[in-house]
Image (cartoon, rainbow, N blue to C red; front, top):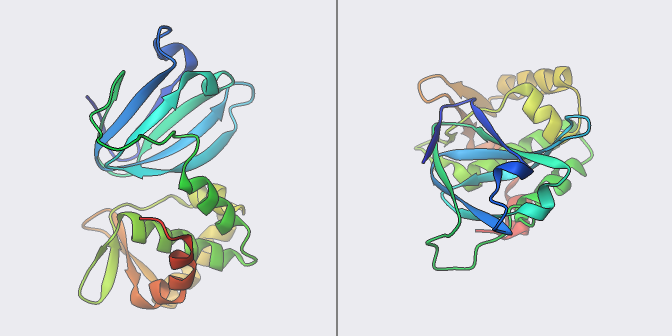
Length: 198
């Protein structure tokens, strides 16, 4: 069992996986991981998704030129095993719905819309409903958001400031997350529903 605190990460390399097995399984028991591929050639990061409370298949042959970075967005407990105890078929970490979601977010024309859609999708996937708002149990850094939506960190900082002024989001200092307004979720509900994932 691996335990990571918020902000900690673990890199998995091609050599870390057992030579006798073609794949391993990642079982997330608690918390949310942001998963990226890291190029072994130039250390460039390629985000491939956010995962929590699920099993994923790691195919060894897909890691030849990449490492896999697992980054904890909150406190995370997970294991990497040769077998899984999931009743359903286990999806590959390299073929998941997040790849489509991240592409669709990046294709939006305005940066504020991209950021709003990213936040709405994360709330839909990992958040919870409060009396007058929604809570996302973690907060992404401005550089993480910039990588995901395709802009500079300073642009994200400026847009987040505008969103706070409009009352769309605010920091939840007690939970290390963010509070998201009903207005933001309502304005992006069509986009979220269009994706039709559970």
